[in-house]
Length: 261
Image (tube, rainbow, N blue to C red; front, side, top):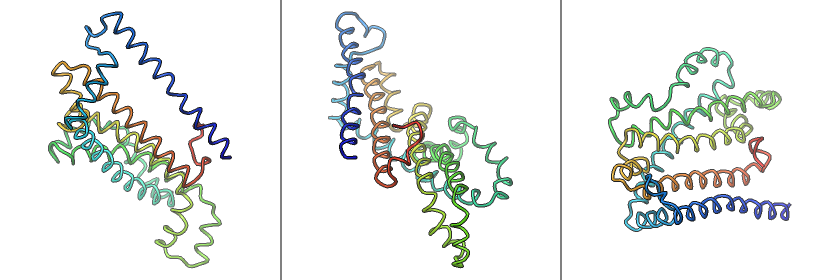
């Protein structure tokens, strides 16, 4: 098993070959042709702009603002989604009662709610956190419903034989049995949270990486704008890799999504 994991780890790093080749090709094209005249920038200029933003603290400040909103929103949304998912997963009657309401709210894009939350919270963190939470709760909710409904009936029968009250049944039987599925929903929510946070910052909120990108675009600094864009992608990759590592340690590789290697 260790040898297989080592081989898999080495193969995973070979995935860096494609982006490295693309960067080299773009750098070569920038040296041969004038690609920067159209508002683009060479990888070397983008790297220099990122390094300068790191030195003056603007990159770290914007990153901290975006991560605070994204993580706070995903924790709030996941908590709500977990409570709703467990309750509606245990009771089909409750699910039928709330189904129409939930299915009417779910398709509304978070960006479409910006005027509403602006009236309630104004600009700032709470506006962004509320929109992230609205988007992040759905994966946890649906995975929680599916996981709770997939619990073996015998486990619930044992809890009744032991005369557990509903709260004990929840914490000792339901949550532990459904946790692998719930964790997959949390992982999806984390990816959605970063997307929504940056989108809200681009559209309205004067905070974070999205707003920094817009300011770089407005001041005609394409190399800085692209540096922020690439940095957002790296953060997303880091989030995904970290949460997969935690998931593998807690539940094993069998708890991954079916499409994952």
